[in-house]
Length: 162
Image (tube, rainbow, N blue to C red; front, top):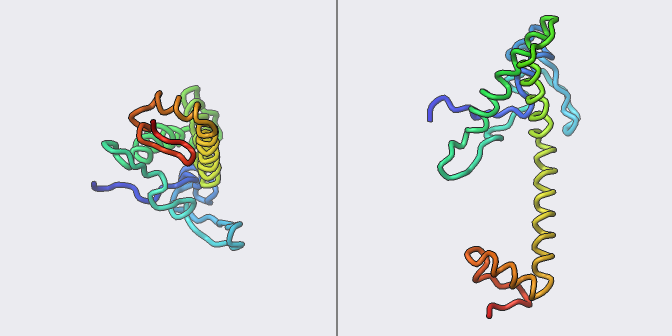
């Protein structure tokens, strides 16, 4: 694959550019790192990003689909027009407002803290499901009969295959 983005921003460059004096992705901005307790100068290109942050591993799917198609073409790219209009003192038109709302919704979900919270929620949910499904022989066997391909040979302490 050529020209594949590897630095994936969880704080988009189009948003960070608004914090520079010249409003560009290469302009200077000052970063406050609350975790490390430090400040430093950077650019939108070099801030709020992690290598391969949005890469997915699904067989038959482009691993960079989220970055190149969803974010670049459907969310960030279209929202950049709304940002430009607002920075110029105008109001976004109806389509730009819709794109801006999609941008805001995506931004609320894509940060490392939100991803960690989602992962913790899913882990807790799956553990609870396993706990409930294995608390009695009847529930366990009923679930095995509903999903024989996935659970047919599975045994859990206290449960045996007939």
